[in-house]
Image (cartoon, rainbow, N blue to C red; front, side, top):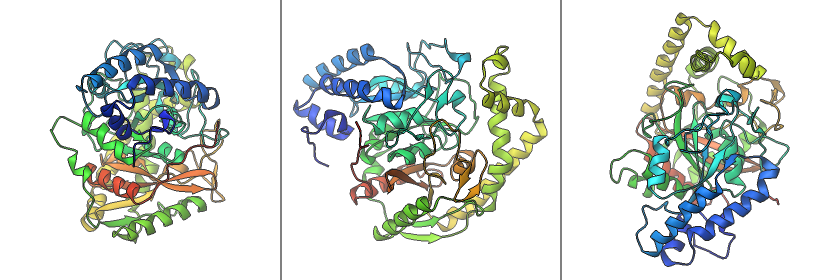
Length: 464
């Protein structure tokens, strides 16, 4: 991709910005101004930001501009505007978790991935909106209200990283930092035509964060409009081994890919499957082998038996010392809290046993295949103020019917990536690739190959 500084500055990716900063064709201050102008234009339409820190961003961009002038940038992300999800602590800014219970929380320190990005010179525009306690698959909270999809403002961008993807897809920030505890990066990225990367467990070290609401499942990862920006982000947040992410720069070898079109026969929108089938064909044209196979039954067992226990007991744990919770929670979260309080220790033990069986089943999958391909979501985006689609492919579904393809990845600590797979009508569709443990760089390499082969177009929402 060439560095075309004639394009609107908010459309340039991190690689292009670095090249332009290096030659002096652009400065971080000029780029920040373009992003703030874009933010002011789109925020009233999509409500993606939980708070904006224009002064802090300007201070950081000023320092970055001087470093580039002296030829001493801190990293490839020096001067690159980005956003941070509002369940990740950024010193001095509110971190409200979408909840009235946390509306006064203003941390004094950065969570460790944010600290690494700050030390690398990134410019933080502010915090992006989340649903309450980041536990729903759409983005609406008592504090920020409904967040909307820039491809169709009547529809949701998904959740819980809904504010992150809505801002990014609309041109606010070059990268977005989010969390993924059950698909919260990958499904929203798919709904908005973005790349979203869920690292493997402990690949991105975390300290100084909020309490764990999904213990052992949630990780921090980046979202981007271009695959080539993801290795730049992971080189900063993904551990401390020098050169650990250089493998992502190499073209991937021919791979054996298992393609799961359904989970135990669960419904998937026909338009979603059509785009995923086309993606499978494109992967074949890139030299990979794609085989349609059945997903292990243990995935459905996890979705039905283990996820409800793990997700709600985590919430109950977070709220155990919150006497005002009953008055401050929305009805949906109050119901989840009640469920979490009702489970027994033996129920949690059984859920953990389901996870162990799932791990063994996936070991068998990856003994025969290098990657797994699935849709990111079983459904296209639905109305922005509704928590989930009640019907998929003419079949009634529960609140997790759209999310059947993602949470098993979190339960087993595997890396996964959302790739943009074109559009169904005017709405983006994403596909998910899952790798075995340690396959993070392999996924990033395949993302680069996908982008370079024309797997996604540099398209933008049609407004404003």
